[in-house]
Image (cartoon, rainbow, N blue to C red; front, side):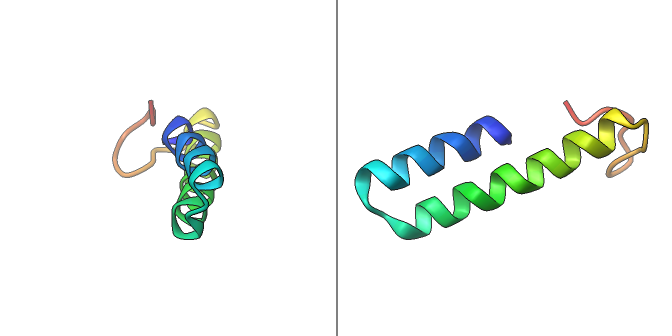
Length: 51
């Protein structure tokens, strides 16, 4: 999800599409939060690991 967000941000900046940039930033933030929760051993969405 983090990689997809980074790709969306880059594509949004290159193509000058602001909504794509916004969605990319949201995906990066949500992916980072889920990665941190998963690495601490906390079950996220019923899964022990997010990846």
